[in-house]
Image (cartoon, rainbow, N blue to C red; front, side, top):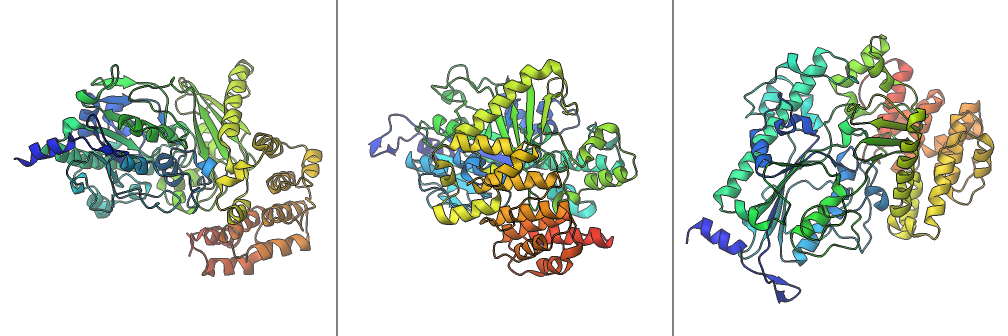
Amino acid sequence: MRRRDFLRKATATPFAVGGEAAEKPRPNILWISCEDSSPYAFSCYGDPLASTPNIDALAARGVRYTHCYSVAGVCAPTRSGIITGMYPASLGSHFMRCRIQLPKEVRCFPAYLRDAGYYTSNNVKTDYNFGVPKGTWDALSREAHWRGRPAGKPFFAVFNNETSHESRLVRTGEEYARTTPHVTKRVDRSKIAVPPYWPDTPAVREQMAHFYECVSEVDYEAGRLLRELERDGLAEDTIVFFWSDHGVGLPRSKRWNYESGTQAPLIVYIPEKWRVEGQGKPGSVDDQLVSFIDLAPTVLNLAGAPPAKQFQGRAFLGPGLTAPREYVYACHDRMDERYETIRSVRDKRYRYIRNYRPFLPYYQYMNTPEGSPVMKDLRRLHAEGKLSKTAAQWMADTKPAEELYDVENDPHEVKNLSGEPAMRGVLARMRKAHVAWQDQYGDLGLFPEGEIIREEAQLGTRAAMLRRPGRAQLLGALRAVAGTTNASVLKGALAHPEPAIRYWAATGLANLKLRAEALEDASTSVRIAAAMACLRAGEDARAVAVLRAALKDAEEMIRLEAANAVDRVGGKLFEKELEALIADERNETNYPARVANRILNVMRGTEGKVR
């Protein structure tokens, strides 16, 4: 028997599910994913500069989705959401580079596929913000492949391509050519359409060109996998997904909750024999809203496996679908060494953004994005007063508490409509959708990281924090305190029994440059915020002592909270501690050292990344 015929027969063999033989075969499912890639870099999405013939051919045979969104503008939180089918803020995996314990009842969705008789392989990306639970993958390595499965098993195979990651975009010359060996069509830099939130400089055009060309290399590798599938005789037995984890790895895109950061390409090819009526029509375009939270239930639905109770999304392909979703949601929390709390809601036309820390700038200094030539030109031209009005607004020292954009008419989201009288109805509706999402799923982003870590040690998981009675009332109280500038309310909230509310109260007083009488609070996170408030209000030796102690704390994220507080009050009184923080051998992420280094560089008039 020829290998192709053997493999086709093996795939079509019924298999056991729960001890009983399945009545019919199941489709194979192949995921081809890439990193940091917005849809416009794929020519099937309409950009004439893009060169992606293999992905275009897949779209011509399948469905191209125009409204697909990640749950965060960065990889690890997004991937934790994809693999569990749960919003990161409901698990505590919403911080970039954190390490959580999964609740015992939460499994990665490939484990459910294994229960249903599938062979699961991953080549090789995980990056879930938690360790890969046993039983998730049959094969997890750079050699993992559907070809490793036993005869008679359908497969779920994942291949991830890193060529378009933001780290590749800063390469030039021989190094860049070496990482994109199959790119023969170079992009004409003069024809690139530079978004209005970036300056139009040669460096920006070069970065954008690198992005297009890295995506062309992604396309080449995707084509190689699709040809392997064809050679193995599996093309008509395999449903193929192609997607990127979030938007392009450039400033104001990756990490941010705008269209440029959260919109992702998604193409799905369903062979005719596996199509449900009305789905998978070749060359079709689907404009329904799709969230990456929907991927897990969709794969299980296509595989004929029941949905897991943990899932917080909906299947958008396969039989028995529920009504299309009305909104998609995204979070922006701690990104590397900088804290943020931003939430967004997107419907088919509008995007609503809630900034819980409006007192912080859009762009906090972060080591990784600051290495981008785009970011360097933004900083340079802003300092020279040469940025356009549109680009300059993203360099502001503060931001509004709410943003609202008509994405249909303002695709770059540069005109905030939240203050327009004519938009009050839309604003109220989108705000209500945001609150409903928080109340339904919980939002650990409203809790300081130090408190989350402390409670995880006591409760076993971060998610357990959201199982308290009165969760909606607590979240409502957090929203009220986090959003107010009323000094009387903030001072009164310092006596609240919930540490997270006291934290936001002290933080709010710090922003008003008013004292927060909480320097002896039981919570270290609250004491740090209170010390920041007291020092912004004036000299305070007790507050200095609090921050000095926190900069030496045994917990790295407490040291990070303290370093960020020092960054807001000035490092003059903490120079010795900041030097020690850079040299601290306990640092695992090195994030506290990055902030300390930045503070010292600013103080001393020097530049450079963390030592």
